[in-house]
Image (cartoon, one colour):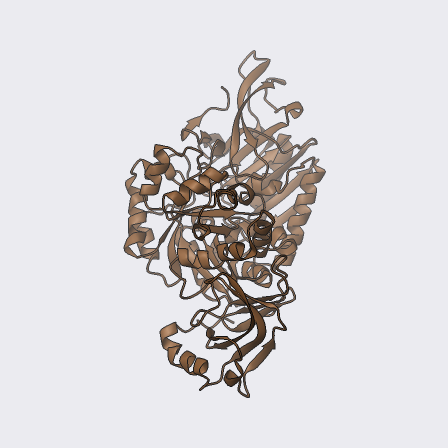
Length: 603
């Protein structure tokens, strides 16, 4: 069952006018609430809302003339009437869920609009994969808008993905009904250098009159940053410091402050508003990446809102940063982001603006969730077989495929090691002295250094032909024979395997080949946890609660192996993201992202 498309404002304007004038009856009236008016910045008590054809018709005192025998009446009893929350930048695939299951997970938390960038599935299945998610998005009972993925692969010349997109594909996608812009332009060195492919994609988006998403993942705010800003990105979510946020808004960009499962970048950057006094209209709250456990147990944009208020933002300011500001950024202020006549009737009923308990959620004039339970029917969208069985390895792997040999006669070596930074996307480029054992390089538990490998899974490249790339990573704390493997490996989505012994690493990789993708934890030669992700090796079409339970088991299994990082899986899944400094692993080897060059494991 699909959600009926909401009629356009011009198509229903006559009825909205009649309802507002009291000449016609509304479909729904919410009585006696406190209006959180994000346009004026006020909380106005004693307000009724009249809704017709999925849109607000009247917002003011006493809507009794709008009530007829068939009008659904909801008593607010003084509760706040809050615009539905908007996530302005996010990746559905990071939740390990399909669009349908993600929407069902977040709507009870008050999220009624999402701007999604499906570049994860694009790196596996290309344009057909994006089209599948786009079409699924159109069937949801909440608003799911899609951005065309811009960087597939994210760093041409440094990695190979399962597909490649360019200006022609972007121009094609701009004609689809649910596409609202270009997804985050991660190849910031390419834009700054005038790369014709990247500028061509941006130009195709600009010609379509749509928004270009940014991704400047560098602390350098000098000429490269200014060149990137001149290239057209209208926003950026990769800042981690208050000066990053300030620099972006000074260049006419919106600073998107993210609080995902593992990216905690709001507290530092929001100081640009709370301490510097910069104009909050140019600041937006988002999540970027949230896994299913966070969604089910902690919330979504309501969680981000509460966190922002805890950092010193006034509740109204925080609310504007996850409603009106987001809508205005995408040119959709007349559609979403506020409770006002003509807008889509997306509203939350809550008894507290400090804690924002989400007691009822109305989307497009229908009650879709109440007291944490999803009430709307599940759409009937299903992924075809062509979107599954995407783990294309040349053969089962052996322990020898995960071993690195030392130079002859060496007792120690100086090696490049990826250093995980807790709660942030960037890594550190470490150089450490590692011991040689029996002519090989096993890592070093004393320095919290274990093995990492990237297994090619799109083109079935044999290990001996470069299908397995080995290196070292520090920070996970694994202290027993174990391995964690995942086919979620941003952004090219090969397979990342991190472990302390090659035997467990081989077992983990082969298990994911067998099940068609997901995440597995091998502990002392036995399977300790498995999350099956059959859709492109990225998503499960099971209900969010089931996926969250499996993900919780995965987290516990990682902890049992010695890991103490917050949301370590999210850190694991980004170790191949060769557009975020400092050091990453790709299918062509280690990449020093500070200079965008391939480097050897040994110094």
